[in-house]
Length: 329
Ligand code: AHG
Ligand code: MN
Ligand code: MN
Image (cartoon, rainbow, N blue to C red; front, top):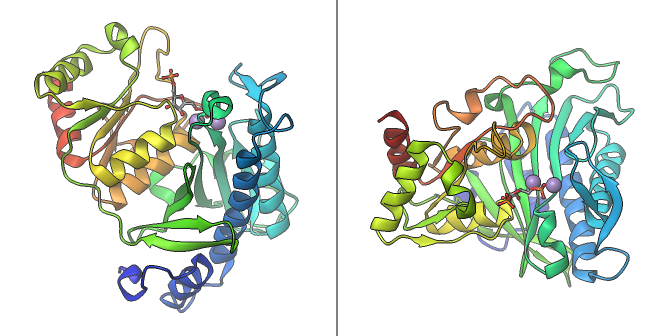
């Protein structure tokens, strides 16, 4: 079902969510509220990013669970999203890149789990280059009345009920799916509203752009090295900004492929399965694209740890098929 067909460009996000809910007579409105809570946090983080002053730019002197230096905005975004989800009341437990353990909101009866990368591309914050937020939403498996458990959080990507990202770029955009196609909304700060700007996004089946950190090429698996050689032979364009959300978004709209394979430095890849790969894989597939770790479909992977990493190859369908062939040669 594609509800966007009935709703014109310019529809507010709130109205879009409300109309979408009406398509499901037994929907209780909890997921709708959760999406609105995410949009609220996105507006606040968008404001913080555009301030770009000494309170928001620079490192904070601490490291996250991955041993990476935390930027002030990593921490600010994490706090803002957690607060919005806690206050919204629809989420029992959160997995965040910035916290080693599960974050329990105190909403023990809430149905949903959120896995999130509150600030993606944080090395780009202090140079005024687009960054993002990525989120995946799951229904809890355990009964309410208690905090969510590890089992609730380690679900396959196929179990996501919704996923999305926010791109804080020249304009701020929210792109999300609930499994009925992908829709994009652009934020109008003077009105404080997201408006439908990109209804029913479909990724072109093929493109002429590839995105990867080519400095790592000598460490890539041979199949990926050969695919890269093919891209160069074809005179494709290399486009890599180093913010996954921004690179993914460009490829989603224009056609292209993003890959962050395993390498000697990052033996299992760099990107995180729960809150980077799975949400974007859900969006890619809903837009007609594909996402794989090179061998297995991302959404079919069974997570074993909250912060596990995996190789990611994502984008236009025909380009992914080509990589798959190179990987098996
Ligand atoms: P994060 O800022 O959330 O840690 O994510 C950074 C990720 C991703 O956004 C980007 O595509 C990738 O790291 C860039 O890695 P390299 O600098 O190794 O290319
Ligand atoms: Mn990230
Ligand atoms: Mn991050």
